[in-house]
Image 1 (cartoon, rainbow, N blue to C red):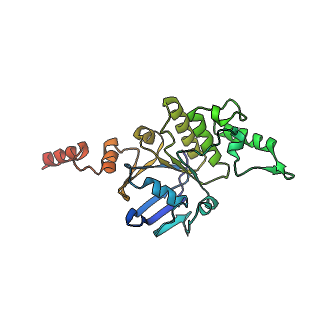
Image 2: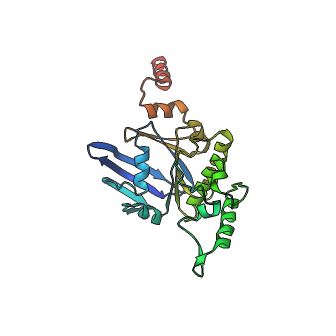
Image 3: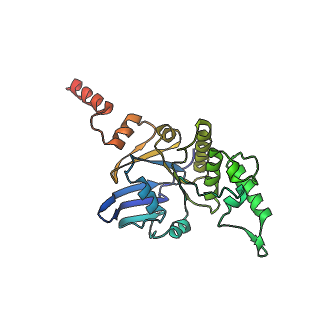
Length: 262
């Protein structure tokens, strides 16, 4: 069991964001601790992508406070987030098909020796990183184009760890994957938690969420609509929060129980 710290790595306090006349986020609160996976869920248009982009520095917030390890910080551009220790793996992965695994892992973070690229050092570190994450790939010199969808996804996640982040945001990492490839990615999410990282997992797949998340934060129409521990919370409760349904199996059951007790 990974120890979860008392002070969250990341905390959002009353965060709001608007685009012209559109209010995308309103008074959003969120906390993520080291060694914890928090799933961020909600219908299309709920504000998940906007929220992630405010944390990643793509969309600076209009109101509220972002705290990093208990201190208020300004995140006005992606470099600000990266400097703090935020790594974001977007759905499109942004991998270069024509480059091999090593060169994708170190793209933008190349190691140099005597002014030249340190290919041997990068290959060694690539093997070590993939080994510690138990990622199985035929060769670190294989072009990305020849990897499966699941292998590409785990390489993209591994690349986010090259800069030693403290928080990793995964945007729909299993959206286009089959059952076996999904299991490979979810195993990797669990290993990120075991390494003591804070993880935000954005997903529409409730089975994936229940498999790896510790808590589920629901966004609805740009606002918080509940945070639930995965253990002890039914899937119906979470789906009701996502859809905003008041007439659902859970509330009907509660109403019947109340009537009986009266």
